[in-house]
Image 1 (cartoon, rainbow, N blue to C red):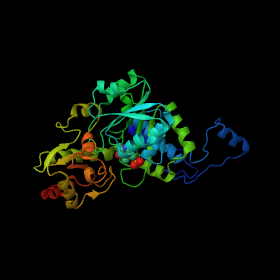
Image 2: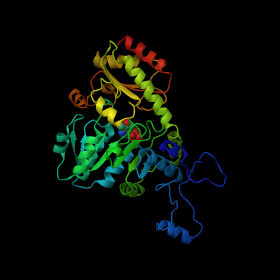
Image 3: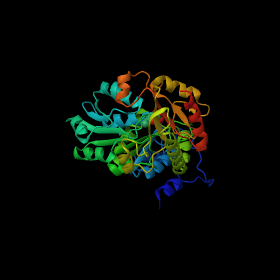
Image 4: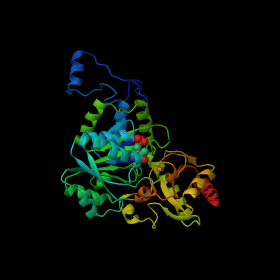
Length: 388
Ligand SMILES: *Cc1c(COP(=O)(O)O)cnc(C)c1O
């Protein structure tokens, strides 16, 4: 059976009401018939729910679906993408370990790697987005335990070669961890290239409607178990309500991503040669600097594209102000199209030089393409470009 069918049909056990859509298990704990049953569940001798900080039926269902879609043995869901990231680092790294990461990563991930992990004696070496195999290898030292990257990168949409980094991880026996938030498992499955753990912010395309926060780690059973043990004691539990929302959302992920991607490709092709635009990056356009890698590892180009306005910082601000329909908001991966200007918002605290290191030019605009009619999105962008 196709994995999309499997994920859609995956459901936790029906209750006595024989409901078709899964109910919400809004409960913090679960009951036992007698002391012996309770003892056995606590002792891990018998399967059963204990407490929603550990696991909840709604969370369980979401995890099963995500493991099917990513093609991994197991998955564990937590309260946000960042909780997933932090639990992964804390559960699997220890004092003295180092990790090698691409420097173009989500802002809060960068903060965790540079501000918090070093407090526990865990340090990182950064490599640039276009690092060669030799440059990745040169960053590895005898204490390195993990290679980390996200692809496509946020917000500049560069593509890293999963096959190449997977090969290095194998050669040096390192954990290979991928933030797969921008692609989703419907477009890219990093485990095919040797990733041991795949991290998602459920908040973005997985929910896809801008409603709830959530995070999920998919991977090998024994690694996920370590992350589960850390999380059940430290408490980044996902709300059953959010799990219920996210699980239902996964049933439409495939059709949503197809449309997000076809809308994005249409817009990218229409806008690529616009007179106000210096360059436009979309993984499925031949002009993308890593087009060949994108072709190899992504089913389509995804729902995001980025372009650089010739007018720089001021043009970026003006473009946002000119938009009439697209939302100005920090999120991405919504049914409604969103525009962002990283240099004046999410990355405003960095210096020009720091921004350039991760390919954030002053006029960079990132568009998260929604499900509105593609010509309405195009019309809004075109009219906003007129006076920049
Ligand atoms: C949003 C995001 C995260 C963090 O997820 P939250 O759910 O907001 O905690 C991590 N990585 C990427 C690439 C993201 O876009």
